[in-house]
Image (cartoon, rainbow, N blue to C red):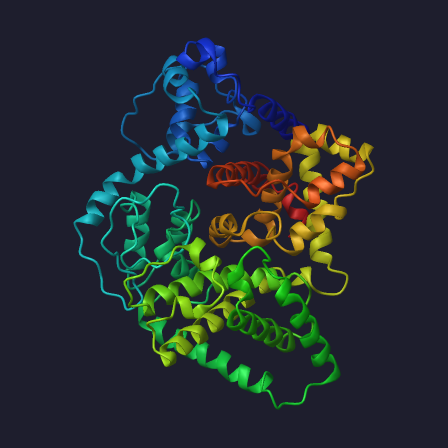
Length: 512
């Protein structure tokens, strides 16, 4: 089984390199074999799991589909009935699907097309139903076309800001969040491909278990949790309280690390923000003595604080000014955004941000607590898993790293410890975390697949470097100019590998 999967992934990797689209290929005039070569070895069950059911049917009709590791597949029994699809031949596939597209793009687009066909009837029916009232349900503002260059996946003050018309998936997610009893699994599925900024805070809280799925309990739960955190601040962070020697050591380390957090973004160096982050990390450490504080936790608190700050800003700011995420990240003072907000409202908003960030950070760290216990066994286990995974999906790169004497721990330790927060631009990490919170074990297992996909994306460059250059490259990845397109390709690749190796269990069982 391992040899079969390893062989398939090597073939898929070799064939997934984007070809030269100049000349006749740009006109879709390449032959039948070229049209199906990238996917003829892909197991049908993988195409179906990626949502590419119609691609599997097309390859099946032309006799080019692989039976894969599971033998022949009964497509009709495995998939729901869908309306007829226009692409029924390899020639159509060549001209309409493969033109100017890599296999990864084809799979992602196939997933979207398949999901749209399956769910269209349900959507039509849902649109005829009235929305149920919910105190926590987000409401859409008036929208108009979004200015060029704005990243719609980032948070911002949605009141009056130019945003795109809601997509079908966004409408479905909004309707699901408006239910009295939310189906969390449906929200996970809809959120995986990216959460709209106006819904992100609620979706993250819901999927991390901070908010209950029942709207009847939501306000009480949120109020009780926030009060509990403020009581913990009074108990553990009073200016006049006496700290033990261990607590004083924790506080000193947190105070040293917080100013180093996200050095490229002024927002995280605003005094009020740094004070709040210091309290969150210190209180978490003293309430979890078996783990305490470990360097790197400061990075993990920042996405929560930023997303929830944008939520509160959109709620309390009544001015005509709108704030984009880029503008907020560049802030040197919160008074710029709270200029028209009463001081007591501002204080209450910051308290809510701090409390929500604490509880969601707690939910995250509970999933990876063995990363920060003595000897950090969780990190060692997952770095070993990443090494095994890379040896199967990119054997040439693994052999080169071995020949140069580079141990994965020398670069991947930080990737696991800080969940890539220092490797990818902060705005793009918000998108990555959309996928993480949507996966049942996203911050632990799926993160390893993302790390492997990130490493694999630089394979051609890495195989040309010696030991010293490898260390320098991997500790300073050239990702600052990346966009959502590169991130989506990384996540798509990670999803496919997770579908292959995760379902078989022969690798994943080693890190459970």
